[in-house]
Amino acid sequence: AETACIEAEARKASADDLLRQAAGRDLDAAAKEAEVELLESDLQAQELRIKELQAQLKRGNYRVERAKEMQAAEDRRKAADHAMQRQATKLQRAWRTKREDAQKRDRAALQIQFQARRWNRRRQGAARTIQQFWQNTNRMAG
Image 1 (spheres, rainbow, N blue to C red):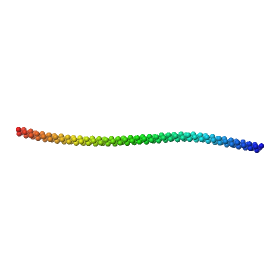
Image 2 (tube, rainbow, N blue to C red; image 1 turned 60 degrees about the vertical axis):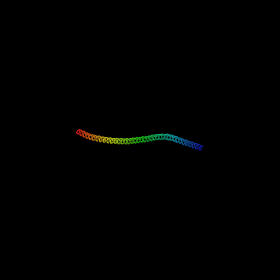
Image 3 (cartoon, rainbow, N blue to C red; image 1 turned 90 degrees about the horizontal axis):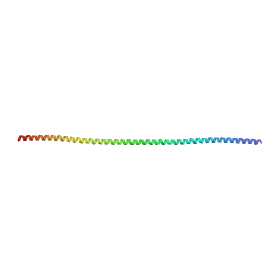
Image 4 (tube, helix red, strand yellow; image 1 turned 90 degrees about the vertical axis):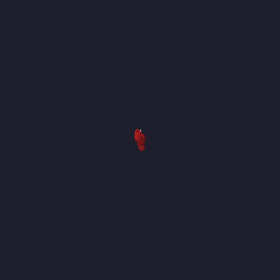
């Protein structure tokens, strides 16, 4: 009977030990489940952060693209303005040259008119002198 008692106590101790081990495993499992839940929530937070960073990167890339487009548009506008300025300068130069050529032609025409008038005055003066000579000669003869 003593051996049965000892065996029963040993079985009870073994059962208690098994229960403690099972309780320890349950605690470990509960701790691991809590850790899994924490890790899952951390993973979700990291995924959310990744999405936010990707969206921020996308916005940043959009801003960079937009800035490049704006710079390219500004460069095109400046190039067009510069081309227009060159064209305007070219037109002004051509206009100035035409005007100067026209002024030269006008001066030449005025010079010719002046010379022609002076020549006509001299010719008319010479004609008057000749006419007066002949009138004076005819008066004296007659």
